[in-house]
Length: 325
Image (cartoon, rainbow, N blue to C red; front, top):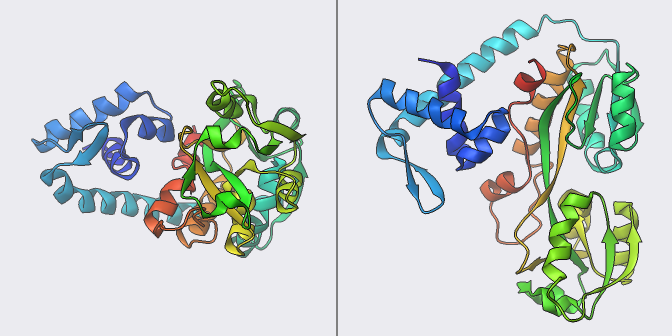
């Protein structure tokens, strides 16, 4: 029985989608489907049913799931046991975008130092294009940046951060469960632009309006955008990790816009293709621990339990495997 088929089965149960599983495992959707079909033939039963757009476990799938999960855990423990003896570098040169540097790195690095106390970290903050150049020049070991496609680089999906509309907590919208795009047309927007493709969805939601919202401030820094919103200069769309402290303190409130389906900014962990260092596995493992322990998983909306939070803001699986290819 192929362990990769079992892995796909567990991932589909986690993500509830063949497509999302394919993205996480860096496979095509037909490849994931073929894996499940092979596993079903070996077991002699169906493992999933489709209910509308949802994929759910059959009764046989539910029975097999704990055994599949245990097999993957056992394999992971074996890998970890072998890797404990791997020599780590004395200095780790990390590159990251501004948002990762501001909100994730301060929680990631202390954990890394606990596990690898002999490592000295040198952090460089910059844009994706600049950090790609540093990777290719050998000036940076790993980088947390937007997804890139380059023959000399390995890219693994790392973190998905949902984007929401945020208002100051004394704003009239703060008491609303959701608002329409039309209700925003008389409001001033603080527009934080961090990626053209990501923000096209926001623009499209306003295209049909007679009077689109006024973009009073167009900025390229999330902290600047957040502080303008906190000062009452306008309302704006922000990545959830950027506003989690202010939401927790009751100073900012996330608001759903009915015309906008949920979307997110994605960060990838990128390294040179020939690099097979143990440090990338440590980084992915530490980040996964942070999310499981709830340190990075704070739901922007009330009424969501921990399970939903982990679904909304989570590290992407398969990092070590993807970077090791």
